[in-house]
Structures are given as structure tokens and as C-alpha cells.
Image (cartoon, rainbow, N blue to C red; front, top):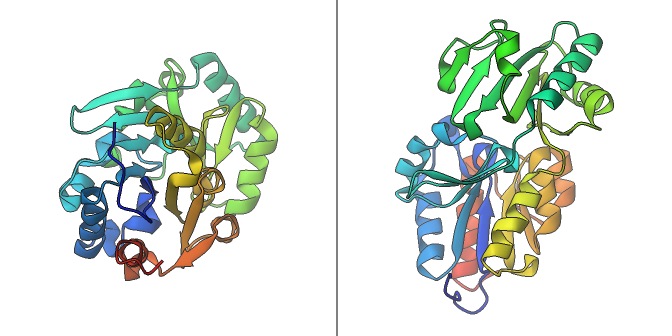
Length: 273
């Protein structure tokens, strides 16, 4: 059970990674790492919340100099990097994945898919996926292989499609089967089990620690961060955030490349926020 932090501090700080905590070059700055260290030493639980799978996190932990508990795959996985084990996994069953792929191919013939299987431990993608084979742990696979096992996160990509309209199309086509979200990249939509979001996973983790929403502070930048920003008692968007994330946030800090997370956390720790 986490100890109570110093007066005036949240009991839990949850931060998104890409575009929020990570700065130039997709790395953690020394200032951001130090600010989270200070918070943890003050008794605050620090939690990472990301769309990434756990196999893409070792370098981040190294840059942080700490192995914080992590919600991965937009809420589909809770990962303990200290024990290197998955604590919770909520995948989409294969039959539903097949239905999703079939419906989307009918609406978007050029769509290609990537599937995070084995609770995010492995990522398969179709040969037409617009990234080199093996990058980020991805391995080329036949379409049937992607739908042969439970999928913790399914990605659909149509690079020439505009992000907002493509996301709306996907939600209309398969929103009754899966949770649909996006990170803002052109023609990329991500899907999880119905009801599984960063917000639902954060609520479950916080509940297990007996930490109520009003004692949670979150940082984010993209639409997939909105559910946790709406759930938490205190939410902060970085200045570079998507308009939806800014609208959901209670406050705005500096951009990710200007160490916005650190700036805000330092103010809290110094009693200035």
C-alpha cells in the first residue's frame, strides 16, 4: 500500500508518454525524470499510461532511471516492469477481431492491420503495413494470423486518409464491437476491447491502491488520453496537445519539448500550484 504523500500533493500522478512526457527525439529529459523521482520520494505513486506495448518500454525505463508501474496498449494491459510481468490483460476475442477486419475492409479496401497479441508481448502486421518489417517488435504476418488469437490492441491504417474523418468512419463501422481511439497520426486508428480505455484502466489501478479520482493528477496530449483526463480529479494538457485533449483538461502546462510535465510537477512539489 502506498504511503500518503506530503500535504498538498496528489496521491497518484499518471502521465502519457509520447507527445507528453517524451520530448525531442522521443526521449525522457533529465528534468522530467528528476521531477518524477522527487514526486515518488515525496510519497506520490507515479504511473505511466501509454498506447505502446511493453516491449517498447525498456529504453524509457532506462532514461527515467526507474521502473514505474505502466498501463500499456491504451488500457488493455497493466504491466509490472520490476517483476517483468503482466498484471492484467483485457484483449478482444478472435471472432470479434475477424468481424472488425471484415467490416473495415468493406468500407476501406486499402486498409492494413497490425495486431498486438500475447497481451502485448508480440506485434504482428500485414505485409502492406507502412513500416519496415520487424520495426518496434513487429513481424510480418498473413491476414489470418492476425485474427487467430486474442488481440489486446488492433491498429488499422490507411495512410492517405485524413485522421479525423478516418477515425469517424472506423467508429461508425465497428464502434459497436470495439473501443475506437486515435493518437493523431495520419490514417491510423487504434481499437481495444469495448470499455477498455486509459481511463478505465487507470480507475481500476487507482481503485486497487484505494486512491480516489480526486487524488489523481494526469498529463496527456491526444484523444486517447481524454478518458483518463475526464476521470481524474486533476488533469493537465501539454501546450502541444490535440484540441480534444486540451478541451478535456482542467489546466495547460508547457509543451513536451519544454518539459511541461516537469514544470508542473516542480510547482506542486515547491508549493506553488
